[in-house]
Length: 256
Length: 115
Image: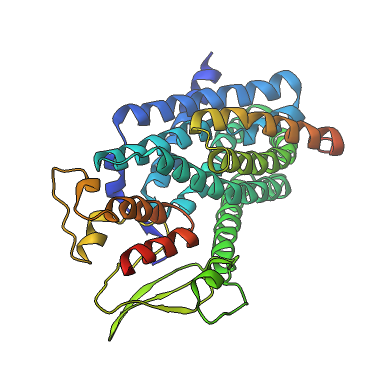
């Protein structure tokens, strides 16, 4: 399923973070109304799309992701930044829906207030989700196909929506960003990576390949020089858009 | 005073509701859509209709379009500050506010308010 509702994610948020959002929401709403009363509807309308809440949301997301990674003994700073950036990218698409909300409201409010709110919210939802879906759908693989050599694959400019390591008879097979198969040594295994931000534990991935991480030791201490950096890389891959070169580096490390 | 309290509570409830929904949704790019939810607008426009009438609310919603475009530019700026320049979230979101101001008031100056 493309989109999931995960109520368990609410456990990550502490009670004071909900309080902060409530207070910020209220604090942002009061001046938005005051602007209209003080400076006219033109200025007041601008502040209806003020990004006042986004500051708190992005900071909270960054701290959640950073904390999650630091629990595993890794530096979570970059992960937090990437998670907040992903949220910002979603907000960009949502802004298109917000413009649709305003336009539909403008057109329908002279007829009926209730109908205006309902139709405007509906327009926001449809336009935002459509924009998000189209962005996912049309991230295409580069049309240039090569014979699958390492350096040619690394020059691919487009990232597919998914990259998969498929466990086929005779060993694991990796498909690069251009859709070319990169055969791996059958004795080497790797993980099936779904390069979309899904809540997937790094430990689960590595158990697939026979690495069982000691529960009370930082993951970087696991035997093998490649595992620590590979854990960092997989963790990054899970958060954001596919990092093709990084993915190939990981394959190189594991495949030898 | 009552008006401010009502605005505060209404805005806080709606923003919190969208934020909770955003926390539960996966993937994160989808939950990011709710970062641009019309949470402030819902509360403010509802109060505007009660206080000043529908024509007032319609006039505000027209320039809200400029604000939404500015919000899109703001979000892009935040994304770049986080990914390319590796800012932390708080300074990135604060600095990018300048982008919102420039774009929003630029559009208002260029195209004007509702007729």
